[in-house]
Length: 400
Image (cartoon, rainbow, N blue to C red; front, side, top):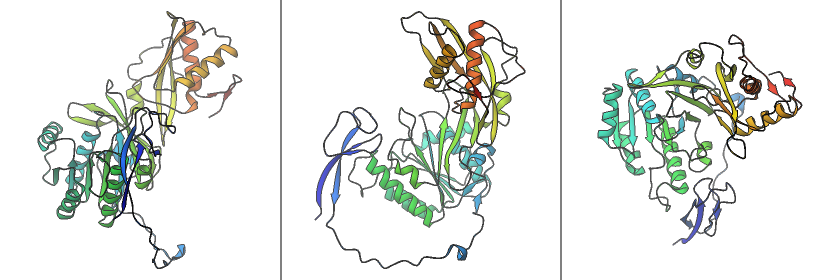
C-alpha cells in the first residue's frame, strides 16, 4: 500500500509547505493554506520504449478545422471560431456574465447544426432554464446536465456525443482520483487534466469556466492556464453596461484581442462600434476631459480620460484611479510636479476611464497628464483632438 502523507497548499498560487502558514511567502495571501493528502507510490524503474521522432518537413500541414460561431465579438477573440478538440478557459468575477455569454454561444452553435452540452455544478436545471427563457434560448440540440462528479460527466459526454461542452465551473468538479477536498488546487488540476485529455482524444471543444481571486487572476494552479489552448478573461464593472472579453493566450490565433458586449435585459449584445459608445455622452469640451486612442489587439478604441482635481480634505492627498493603474497615475503626477511645475501635491486627484474600460498601455500617459492640468487650470481641451504619447521621467513625450 502506498504511504500517505499530508502537506499544505496555498489556494492562491499553489505554493507547497510541510506545515500550515498564516501568510504565503510566494504571493503574500493570508489564510490561504489548506491541508491536502499526498500519495507517494513506491518508485519503479521505467520500462518505456523509445519514441519515433518525425521530421518537420514530413508532417502533414493544413488549416485547423473550426466550428463557426455567429457571435462576431466572440469569434474575434477565439481567432475565427472554435477549433475541434481545443480547450478554452474563461475567467471572470461572479455575476459578470460568463454563464450568460456561454449559454448564448451554445445556442448559436446549435442553430448551426451542431450538438452541445452545458454542464453546471453551481446551478440547478430549473435555474438554467429560467435564464435560457430570459435569453430566448429554445434550442433542442442544447443539453443541460447538473453534475459535479467527473466520472459521471465523462460518461455523459461519451454517451451524448456533443461537439462542444461547457463545464461551469472547474472549481466545483471533483474526482475520487484526488485525495484533496473539492475546489482545491489538487482537485482542479486532476479534473482539468482528465477532461482535457478525454475531449482532445474525442475531438470535442471544451470550455472551462474558472473563478477569479480578489487580485483578478483565475483561481487554481497556474498550470491550468498552461494546459488549455486559449485563456479568456471576462472584464467589466457590474455598475456599467459594457463587458470586455480579452484573450491573454491563444494557440490558434492572435492573443490580446478584445470583444466588447453590452449587457441588456435579453443578454449580451455585440458592440460593433465601441468608440462611438464610449464617447457618445461627450457632447462638448469640458475641463479635465481628454480623448485618447488605445489599441486593444488589432482594434483601435477611442476612449475618454477624465480627471478631477480638488482641494484635499485630509492630511495626505488622495490619489484614486479607475480603469488605469494607480501607481502609473502617481508617477505622472510626480512628473507634472517636478518637470511641469504643476503644484498638485496639496490636491486630491481622481482619474477615470469612462465606460468602465481598463487600459494598460503607456500611450495614454499624455492624455492623463493633460486631463489633470486641464482640470487644475479649468481650461477645456479641444474636443476634436486626441492626446497620444508616452511621458518619460524627464518630462519628454515619446512616440508610440
